[in-house]
Length: 66
Image (cartoon, rainbow, N blue to C red; front, side):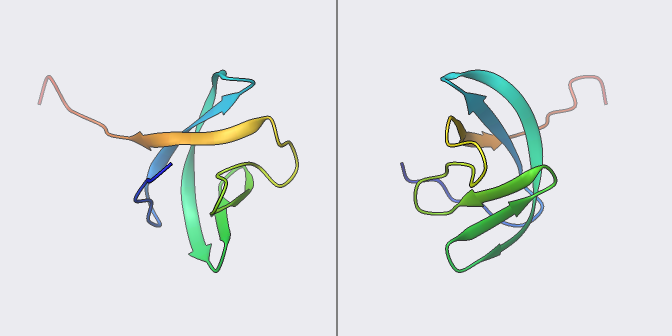
């Protein structure tokens, strides 16, 4: 998977292939992605705690009424 993720991005997390939540990336260092809800491996995008949770993509916010 080839995602460009940077600090401040919101990313979608899947658990067992189904939507789980949206988290914000706090920091990226080495092979670690630190989010508001846990640590993920930058190479596999899997959670260090629960390997069934993976980052699946960057979320973009659009204001349709502004």
